Length: 256
Image (cartoon, rainbow, N blue to C red; front, top):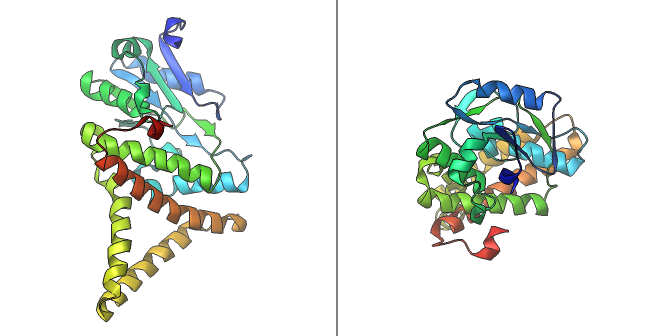
């Protein structure tokens, strides 16, 4: 709808639960001096004003055990070229949006992934990540609201793996599902033999130790939230990614 009213050359997108740094627009526009750059994104950092459960959610997202190499979406990292980015902090040329027909809202919240795919693959243009194009993004608190968001992300990513593999068929997205299988199958085998039980117990101990170490911070009270939130995020993402992967189509009730 905004395309019918926008008079500028660049469209800026931000979520209703986010707010930008002072020079957000200025820093973003600099990147468009390169005519090959069609879109720009930047980190969405958890604000200091969020409550303890919201901050814990932000730390789960930013954890390398959860986001891996994609942690730059939640923390400022080096400037780089990317092929997929969420629309909570996103700039795109108006001409590009008109050419592509805007967002495909049939895939909410995966409409940004579809747009980025079309920008990079269909048009052959660049998307740039700039750490100075930063917003503060209020998080959904642990546990129910956070996990609901994770489930929605995972469902669409699993579906996109087979429908749009150009940007979604990446090994990192499969890790939580493989982990889920490992937990279930490992538990079954550990009941059958002592060696299997030892290996399974050792692996589980290492995993829980890594999660615990990554959960520590100066806010001691948040440690239990981050610890449990990380584990539940792994399980939730793993299950819903698999659900999306085996779905022939996403039903209307899955889109919200």
